Image 1 (tube, rainbow, N blue to C red):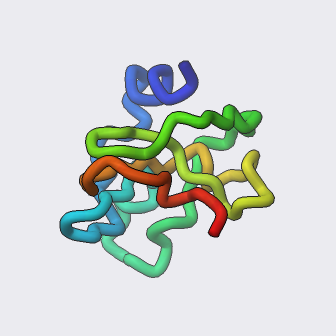
Image 2: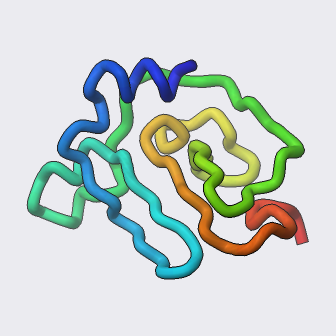
Length: 98
């Protein structure tokens, strides 16, 4: 619901994708990407903390999800500002422990 509220409220308007990995994923939603100075891209957030909502659903083609800062820190500023669209064939989650 948090993502839908941000999107519906215009939080992502004008933001760009700041990580593009052809054939794998896109990462965007950072409000700092509205600034032409790329040194700040990847550092913005909504200002709200969100508890982790972990799932066993694999990240497959077409999946949208929010990105944590680290595997141990699931409730971080970064989790609120990025999403990814996975374009790889179905398989194990890219976030699965090795």
